[in-house]
Each structure stands twice: as structure tokens, then as C-alpha cells.
Image (cartoon, rainbow, N blue to C red):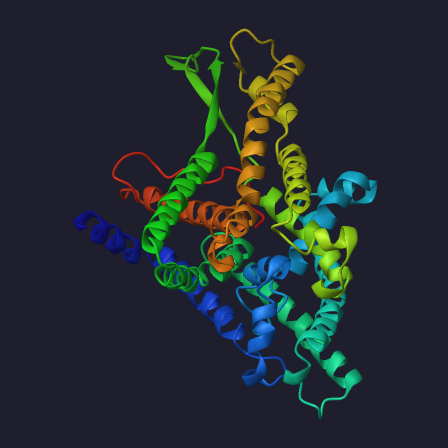
Length: 445
């Protein structure tokens, strides 16, 4: 406890770090307040039935990403997901379209242009999703819509407000990244998810204790499994394969340089939370295409509206594995790494410098990515499995998968940045032994 208090004092004594943390908390507070402001034309007192329907199936997952704003019909109902979807599309274009490939290689100026394209596409995606959301509101909560608002006027104002709300949330995320601590988009998603955890635990505890015949014991077993899964996710996020690297000895004057052995830490889950986000965004598309109207879905489309469905989980797992390899290939460049080693007179024992080194690093990365991708896919479908065995749907969404992985990854990443600030100023880190290992690759969510 004494160590914890001392660490808090050290954090507070660093003016820049204190300012960043307070800025982050203020912007997060603004986001949470906005998530409770109901859309114009909606009677907040009549939203209970709509809230119950929008917490079921795939819409419950969408509501989770929006921090509960979706079920409350708030101005931030669509959350940050349209921006994530637009970012995915632009990243795919940087691989397939030569013009975007050229922009990516132009440095800061190219990055600004890509960000501008992402914002424009975000407006388009948000407008489309906002129209689908209006259709869903009319179909599921017609009683909550104030009659004085005409059909066209309600659609127009709601679409504009939802689009503006998503753009404002996107701006908050950018400000957190620039002026706060951690990655803004990731923190907004994490805060929205974390805000629903206490209520989910209370609901699960209430429902289990109301059962006869050992309901409390079942709840304790669920908590134990939840903790076990959390520990497994921490191991997945922090797991690395160390590739040994030797540096040639050089003598300059009376000093010796090099001649030491170091390691390249290759992450088992180098892609972080992005494969889950990518796969989830793709799975949202069919639900959006039918206007969120899960009752009218049928056949193949209905599979995407029920996250407890076996085929849904199979498709979702395959997408997670595919996107794990895709995003790892996007952010991990073995050729560049081999060139850097060659320029610094470094080599992997038993492997020739240059192309052979790049091939070796790429092969090692492929081998360690495979089990990481399968474990990530297994974690991704756990909420559906938990819901299928009659765990409360709200708590089931935290039982693994997207919510827990995002929370673990973002919290570790943010704590690592705080620890780096402390160590840079010659303070002790957050842990008495070792260091927090966050994601080494840039986090986009």
C-alpha cells in the first residue's frame, strides 16, 4: 500500500503527466455525459422496451461498443464504430490501390491526406448507419417517438445529430491521443465497455442468487473462470518470442563497440485488438444493411444477428484468424528489420544477413502468429458460448472476446505509457519487479 501511495505521488508530481491524465479524464467525462443525452424527438421515459430489444444478440455487441448509447438513443448512439469501419476501408486501400500506397510512403504529408480521406469516409458511413438506426427506432420504439416530429423531419434531424455526434467522438479520441495519455480511440471504446461491467456483475449475481440449488456457487465459479480467462489474455498480450541477435565487435580508438548479444522480441499477438475490431465491424455490416431489424432477418442474414449461433461463431473465428495474419503483415516488416540489422552490423546466429534474415524472421513470425490467431479466435467466440449456456447476456459479453481483450490490451498499453514517463524521469515504475509490457506495435484502437 505504501508503494502504491508513493507511486501516485510520483505521478502527480510530474506536471506534464498530471496534465495529460487530467485532460484524458475530462474528455472521457464529456463523452460519458454525452452518451446520456437523448436524441431530439425521442421521449426518454418510453425507451425501456427499446432498450431491452437493443441489448439482444448482435445489437447488444454494438451497444457495448457504443458504451450503452445505442440502447439509450443518445446523440452518441453510433459511437466510434463508423470511424473504425472507415479506418479499416482506408487501410485496405493502402494495400490494393497504388495512389494510397504512394500517400503512405510520403511521410507526414501523406498521413494527413489519408486521415482526411478517413474523416470523409467516416461521414459517409455514419450517414448510412444513421439512416438504418432511424429505421430501427421506428420499427422497435415507435411509441417513444414524439408524434409532432414528421417522418422526414425526424429522419433528417436524427441523421444530422448522429453524424455530428460520431464526428465529435472521433475528435475527442484524437485530442486524447494528442493531449492525453494512451490511444484516444482505444480508450473511448474501453471506457464504454468498462462502464457496463458493474451493472452486468450485479445482474448476474441477482439472477444466480434468486435460483434455488446452489446459484451462488455457480456465480463464484463464473467469477473464477472470468479471472482465469483474464490471466490468459494478459499472457497472450504480453507473450513474446525472443530471437537472438549478435552485433559485430568494433574498436574505435580505445573503446569497443558491439560484441554483445541482444534479442528481438516478436509478439505472439502483434496485431493486438485490431483483428477482433476488424472482424466485429465486418459482422456488423449485415445487421446494418437490414436496418438493425433483427426480427425481419431470415436465412443467411439471420446468422449475423445472433452471436450465439454456431455458424456465426465459425464465421467470426475465421475472420479473426484471417485479420490476425492480415494486420500482422500490415504492421510487421521483416525486410526492413533485416536491413536495419545489417546496417548496424547485427546478425542472427546461423543465418546469413539480408534476404535470408528477412525470410527467417518472417517464418518465425508466421509460426508464432498461428497459435496466437487461434487463441484469439477462441477468445472472440467465448461471449457467444457463455450466452448459449444461459449466462446473463450482459455479463456474457465480458466473459471474454472483444470486451475483455480490449480492456486488457488498452489498460496494459496505457499503464506502460505512464510507466515510461516515470522511468524517463528516474522514478520507480508501477511494479516492484519487472516492467509492464504493453503492445510494442502502434495501437489504432
